[in-house]
Length: 204
Image (cartoon, rainbow, N blue to C red; front, side):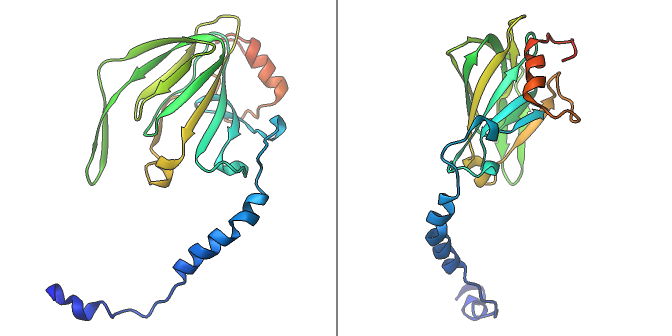
């Protein structure tokens, strides 16, 4: 047999109940799921002052819900402001709940060999949207959301699939922070109200 495999495969004394662990995990799933929420109340949806902007997480694997594959959050963009700018390998869709604005999208050329490389294309595309529209973000596209209204906030619902992360492709890069970002700030409903009324450049 090639390369002496006939002798080498017998080496090693380690034992592990890996397959049994898979069976045990499936057997325990009903009890585990019984403790996970099917209904998430507003008070159980955490706020986050993030580099991408003001977020209220609706579904996330850290929130102990029954959702297995999708993360979702609401993004609030104050009047005249914008989100952060970022890029991720997973595709994304956003439903515009409230407001109007536009997106800037910059596609990237990607090369995956033994390493992963990406390079932004020269063209930046602009897309206008308003309440009731759905915004689609292609994989690995640099993007940023802008609130075109001077007196009203924008609210977006973002949904993104976790499958990329489970496949080891959790590529997320922040390229620009939202104007409101302050890591020392803890969001509250009262503070959110102030952000909703403030114009960019004004203190909340």
